Length: 392
Image 1 (cartoon, rainbow, N blue to C red):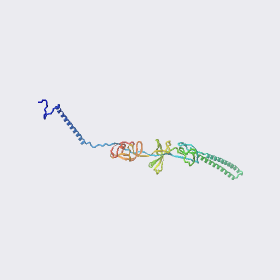
Image 2: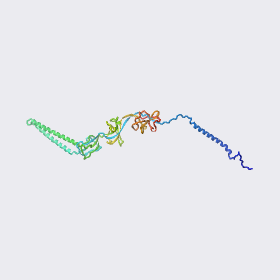
Image 3: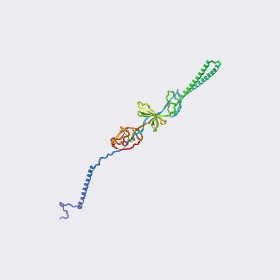
Image 4: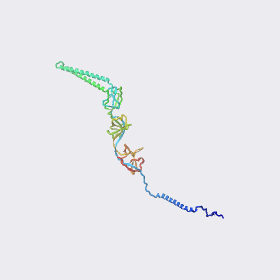
C-alpha cells in the first residue's frame, strides 16, 4: 500500500491552500460589479433619452445692442471753402509822368511805407532848371516894359488937359501899356508851366501806401514809355481773390466774414468779402470773391492761400463722425427700419466740425440712425436699438 500519495479520481482535484476561503469572498464582488454596470447603463440611457422630451420652448435669438439717435435738424453756418491768390486790394502802378531823363536817385525800397506825394525817385533836371531861370528873366523884362508903358501913359494923361496930347495918342499909349502887362502874364504862365514840368520829373507816390516793387535804378534813362517803375498797395490793404464755383457763389453777399490762411502758415487772418464777381468765366465756370484783409507781413501779394467763407446758414441734421460710413459707392449711414432691421441710407455730407458732420442730403432728421458699430453691421440685420439723446 502506498501511503501519503494522493488519489485522483474523476471527481477529485488538487486542493490548493486558501481554496475554501476564496470561493465565498469573490461572489459578492462579482455581483456588485454587475449591478454597478447595470446602473450606469440605465443612467446613461435615461440621460440620452431624457433630453429629447424636454420642451425648452422657442430659441431666444441673441440680438446685438446698438446705440441709435434721432438727429433732428439744426441751424448751422454755411461755410464755403475756396483757394486763390493774395494781392493788393488797390495796386497802383507808378511810372514817369513827365518827359523823363536820367534817374539820379531812388529813395525807397520794397516793403517801405510812403506818404501821399512823397518823392520815390528823382530825374536829372539841369537843362529844365536853366529854362526856368530864363523864363523868370523874361518875366522881369516884361514887367519893366509894363512899368515904363504905365509911366508914359500917366504923363500923357496929364498933358491932355493942356492940349499937348491928343486922345488918339492916349489910346495908343494905353494899348502899349496893356500889351506890356499881357506879356508879363504870358511870361509868368510860361514859368509856372516850366516849373510844373520840372516838378513832374520827380517820381512821386499818388497815395499813401506800401511799396511792393521797384524796377528802376540810379543812372537809368526813363521816359513815358519806360513802363511801371514802382508798384504801391494803396493804404497797405490786401485781399484774397478766391476762386468759387457757380453754386458756391449763389447766396454769397458782400460783407460776410471769412478766414484766410496763407499756404505754408498756420495763422488765419480775419477778413470780409468786399466784392463778388458779377460774371462767370465761361471756360472754368468759376467766379471770384474778393476778400479784404488788413496789412500783415505774412500776407504777401502773389502768394497762394485758402479761405473759409461764412455764407449764410442752413437747417440740416447733424451726426457724430462715428455714424458716417464710406465705401466705393460713397458715404452712407445705417438707419433702423421696420422690425428693427438695419437699412442702408446714402447721404451727402456738408460742413464738418470737431463735434459733428452736417448731412445736406439723405436724411430729414426723424430717422433712428446708428451712432456707432456700423462697420460690424450689414443691411437687413436685426438689432436691439438703444435710443440716446443727441446734443442739440
